[in-house]
Length: 384
Ligand code: SF4
Image 1: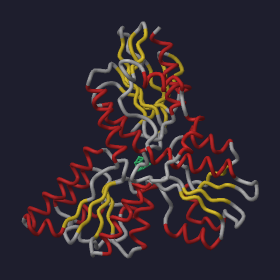
Image 2: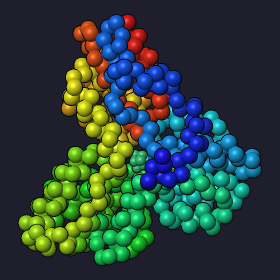
Image 3: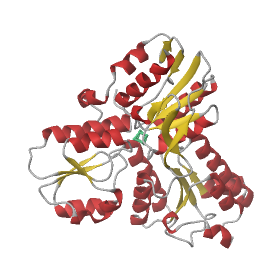
Image 4: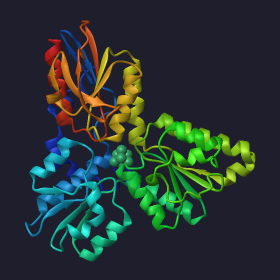
């Protein structure tokens, strides 16, 4: 059945065999499902993991465009198709050039009429679309339906006189596009990146010290009155529990200031993160809270939803985010994501000595099963 947000998911998914893993397929069908029992313990996967519908659709569309390309002109991806190095390398190997995200703003310097442009799942700013139309090149738009819905919802709020509060990372591709669309619609926006910033906003938005918290990329209107008429949206891949907490903080602040009836009229809220993100986070919590001795999270370091799975897992057990099986150099050493520096660091003694061992394995919505399968095989070597 087609996903309501992504109606064009089609049999093209079948063409994505390159991302599949027979091992992961077998584990999904195992009993109990998603568990690989080994002599030294078990590898346990959550009930939902890996590619979401939006990612599958984007990859199927991009893959079909590459297969059907007649060789005239170049194929150029306007930023990473999704934030996963394996997937982007796959397209590079098929002669697709990937423009760094910051370069897409001067797309006219990079593309010619005979080229084929592919818009990634996060979308591109409207300006870039206008430039593509001027260049006259063919364009395949892989923007996710859930992201498009978020843009339309917030643009409508702007047209009805609301300022927009975005809970997200101001420099994340999706939020960059959301901001650009709001600005193009004549709207004012403010991005809060953390719960702490949301709390400070709720306390006293006129406090100058609070204003200093915002970088230039976080607002297009330093004069925006957050207690005017406000519409709250969240980047689709944020931590669900935090989006709910931000909603509560803002709702309480409005109610304190205006009373319930007025707050109702002044405040509008979009329903949190996308379902795929929420389902993966719920399933990750179920798995981690059921008792894992350690957790490996598989996905790109630049993937927001994967990093949030890692943050969730860390609340329950020692957890490491790795990009692929080659990161596991030995039972004593692995290359994992360091949240402080947002780069890779070498972690030692990551594998508990206890046997039998329960190892949880999580994977973000942009993690291909082929990579998850390789990680599982590597981990299984230590549980023989
Ligand atoms: S995580 Fe959600 S918003 Fe992002 S591509 Fe998947 S379905 Fe779309």
